[in-house]
Amino acid sequence: MTSAALVERDTIDRVLREALARGGQFAEVFCEDKTTSSAFMDQRRVEELSNSHERGAGIRVVLGETTGFAHTSDLSERGLLEAARTASSIARSGGAAGSATALGDLAMHPVRAQVAPSDVPKERRVELLEAADEAARSVGAAVTQVQVGVGDSRRRILVANSEGTLADDDLVRTRLNVICVASGDTGMQTGYEPIAKTSGFEVFEREDVPSIARKAARQAITKLEARPAPTGEMPVVLAGGSGGILFHEACGHGLEADAILKEASVYAGRVGELVASPLVTLVDDGTMDLEWGALAIDDEGRPAARNVLIENGVLTDYMWDWLQSHKDGRGSSGNGRRESYRCLPLVRMTNTFLLAGTEDPDEIVAQTPYGIYVAQLSGGQVNTATGDFTFGTSEAYLIEDGKITAPLRDCQLIGNGPEILSRVDAVGTDFAMTPGTCGKDGQSVPVGCGQATMRVSGMTVGGTAA
Image (tube, rainbow, N blue to C red; front, top):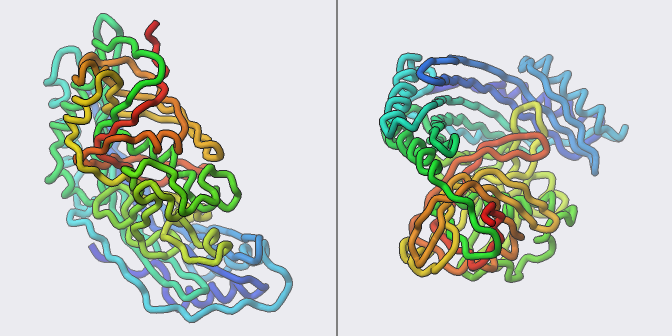
């Protein structure tokens, strides 16, 4: 897979100069070309085979506390210059023209996918859908509905700014989702499993699609026998990979520098303090090969990095984009991300996870006399200013006498991020990642979340049992 530059270097030079012509401290050009394909099967019928393509550029001009931004779908020099003038007019001060550092050598990051989405025939996509559907239904007659979707995207970007940055990236992401519905005397229950990697279609040579489908089906069937969850504070064991979203939401967003500088985070001003159990080391890492939040550069042209946020319980740093780091007089951590060229970048997570520990996962359960075992979380809500959160479970079990026993109906986990981090008293060796989509200020970006099996000594469970 090869590609030509989205915009010529000389054109970028002229656009940056035009963006600064009316006064400005910083100018940036972000160009994007994105293609997506998807196929969807519901009840053994292929309901959708679609493709889309979009391309354009966003131009940002910063002057003091004012940001001018304009976007265009016209990547010609004329279209880019017009957008540059618009962005400049929003931010301008009427002063002398700003200056731009000469662009450096292009930092190229060619596509890493081995099998390009464009090389995959529709028949191959349909074969994947049929294989997953058949595997899910083979688990039992209780499976009454199966939905399977497969999709991919190729996103090429070029980023240049007045500080001399010139970099591009070419990312392919591929995903498959299986949703199963099981029906029984107690009603209907749902199971869900994904495969999602920053990779081409070669991902399906490494991942076992039928196995994923059967797992989703078994989850739905098992939940037919679920009993009401208990209510109250009790130990909660999070299965490897399952609890990453909790820490992404309950802690990660509070460690993003925009919340910190606004003092809208419970972690503001606490670098160097003990904010978690010594067993907790929290990392955000955009360099994790193949994971859903992987990237070579962020959407401001900064190389992806591995950033340790909490180390052995001590808060060490926050996540930074260009704007927040400029305000604080430091460098970006490679966390400037945007949904598309139509959006301004925001400080965002990439792959956020807790490092694995040293304990046997089975022993963690065995040493828990009573509690909840969470195999899969669903969505939740977090107040970053206080750290308070509520998360739902989509697959959970009772722990009795150190053994996983009865499946439980969906329940709520309620707590406070810093408090929960301080209550982590066991971390296993079975590290795993889970793909997700993170929403912030109306923008969605792909992220990864992860951790090993771990126990929180006490968490409030909002169940339905009397």
